[in-house]
Image (cartoon, rainbow, N blue to C red; front, side, top):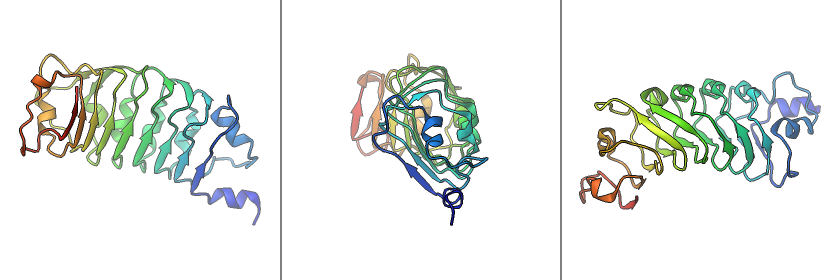
Length: 214
């Protein structure tokens, strides 16, 4: 079996301690795989904590079988590619701890298999609307903290998901407690910018959590 046959069927790819300052395309080019479409069978790409730099490349959206994408705690900058919303098999996306900027793409709302989304990034801005969550009925972990998002959902919006772990610290949720948060009955941990006095926690109600940070 030649090298191309091996990489064509590769399901998991992870690197630790790459050369500081490498970019994501360079990492793949250094392996000399020579495939027209990068890693067509790949299901898990894990490159956390590697000091990778540069923009997130558009070719990530060609990894049609990708289930897990972990690029957290690198030095990536620039926008999050909207084309990632085409990866319909994704169950987990972790882009936290980078230097990415711009907005969260609306296309993420099409990731119907997604159960975990972590964009704890420091530099993202813009509105978070119902479109961002339109098909996320399996979402259980949502981490939006340390960005400058503001909520732009209707007062009667009912999310399609029931999250268990929710971080929205530093997000602008409005002057009053958001009605959509009252619909979340499975939350175990909540990090929110809302003053604790505004959070309608009732012991045993299932509305808000044993672990609460404001």
